[in-house]
Length: 377
Image (tube, rainbow, N blue to C red; front, top):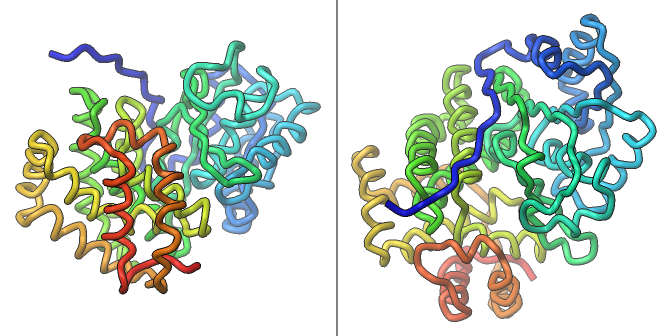
């Protein structure tokens, strides 16, 4: 067997209504002063008030930072760090979507290690301890609650940087599907498609191993059983719970393996054209599956997923993405050389089962961004 390393997962607290157990979870950390990182939408939904009320009733001192932005940049992380510096928190809670959790993790990097987020691009570069972190996702998609990476965009280029360290992994992740009910339908759609891509890419990437593969398979089963009701906004609480758990397991799969070409080609679309991440990944996913099917081992894994579905995986993926009803864009073939150059620099592309080069990446963009489905200039 091929040698591998497996990383720990957070303690998972799963089930409807379990946000109420946040004070007990914090108590296990032996701390009293807390920074809660979130965004204005989560405040408006009432989740922050419920969390802070219960924490304060239990005797904890909690301060809220609600300045999180979508796709947080280095400046956003610095703003959170500056906010937290004088508070001297003993633990950090990230309550919200992937952006809130990335902001919380990024702040955690800088509080005791200093510098800028670009200093931590890669893995294991933080020399000093970090604060205990509790992740409470309100979306079912990124799986950030189960990953030791903060994904942060550069201020000038908007290129995404993956900044990882084992000390950044959450100690506890509270998965309460009741929190995902407040998602706007478009957010639920985009995060669900992101979670699907995580399960499929981690399943075939070259860093897969028995641990990550087990997470990928179970994540796909859960996500496949829930995603279409999520997309048509008919999901009940049980279905939302399956989606949330599947997304978190896909996050654990990434933590123990990696991603591939769909993310490598999607990130330049987001950086250059501000296309939401879930939309960008969905534009590329089926084309990457076609490419990866040339690899016999990847094709065999896809076939196991097809057996579960009772139909070819590629057909099912294309039908599912079509159900999302995402906008169609106008042609701009002139952007492909720029996108290709950016995609060749993406770390995740190194782990695709079919090796990527400029020619294969260009072909992916040409296939995905054809006359009827392309990006704006």
